[in-house]
Length: 113
Image (cartoon, rainbow, N blue to C red; front, top):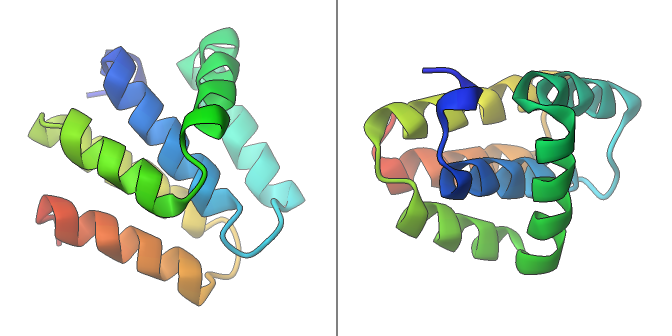
């Protein structure tokens, strides 16, 4: 499965979680921005930007994004892909405790270890 195979809801869940993850430590770094831009290009720049804005409006907290993802992402292969992309973003730079906790919640929520 590739990011292009995600449904609209799965794509929004991915972007919402990425957005929350990137901001966990209070700032989005240059390396995180570059990684997000690369992923955005892969997903289709305009589609990614549209979802980024929508996620900003819909998910004001990490829990909001988690709740949406828990409800909307049901396909196991979509869950694995989203988790992989979240881990990839966390590994761009030094992990913060908050970032690790969010990724841990996603793992637990979907039973992916």
